[in-house]
Image (cartoon, rainbow, N blue to C red; front, side):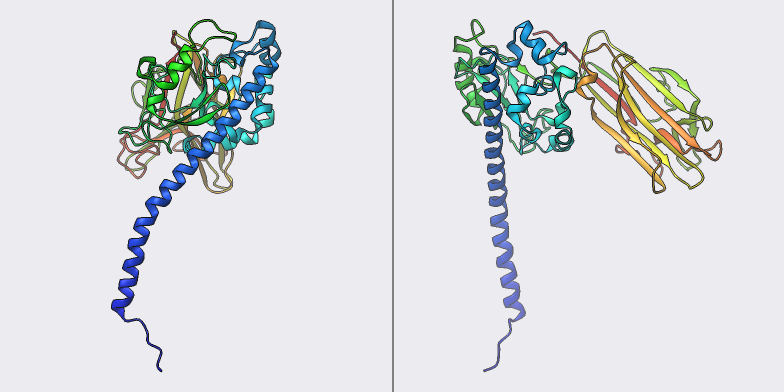
Length: 424
């Protein structure tokens, strides 16, 4: 008997059936993956709950934001601040949490990069020594009115709350258009997770929170009595900045290229620096050293109120043409004395290196009435007056040339936005 091969029609039918089955299975697999991520997120919250309950038992029933002055000195030194970065950096809390990975929800892809970095530095964090985990690594907020003697009080939640008041909040979702700023990639509108002060963690819906304090769980939270606090439980959400950090940006500044009329408005000092214009059809512009000596530019943004959140967007570029090379770095400070390095851009091993900063500033830079941004440069045998080996804010002057803007066409090459603390 001869072996019979598939005909072309039969093969096409099989392929079509496989395609149909794949179309049916892939959405189911995606739903299963999302469900598994929420289950793991609940497990993380359970671990966080146990850490804070243990801390409370060791500190006369008090959570880190409820300590007496002597207890504050013991755990925070002189560095107490009602913010996630400070609280999660307390050594006794860290001992209970055990790993920075627990602080990131698998439903929160936006926190993954910062969390990986924080995991590498986990052993260095100590609130008492002023060393704090980056708030951008944390997916879980804390609730001020939690009390371990009030088992129904809410202790911690996923960060995707629409406001910093649990009594008026709903769960923000990645499926909303446009997505709210606090949305988490793996949670849709009406989806969240939380843990109570008795250690029980669960998935949650909008029926549990908000509704002017009448949500099922938030109402129990408000109504509970006992412990170290008096009266109804506060529904204030402890977030990254402390003191309330909500709403739109209170301050905005930006420019698309260094020759814009307002680009120098906050420049307070330049050393061995000038503006360059390269020769492309749409000229490329930037700040760079005048000669082969250390150079810098400093911008100071002064505010009437303390900052609780600051976003920076900018870039530096360095080049290595063999005998000609350059390097630069970006630094920030809230007082002009203590500086934090945001980007290090050393002499590249290949021809060029462009590094962008496009995120919120670290927690330790917040809380003051100013933000200082400084870029430092050094070049070696930078060839001539028409271009440089170390550049800051490299961007096309007209936005139409071969480099339409590294942040996207029409976007600012430098942008700083700030929110100020608000009273509750």
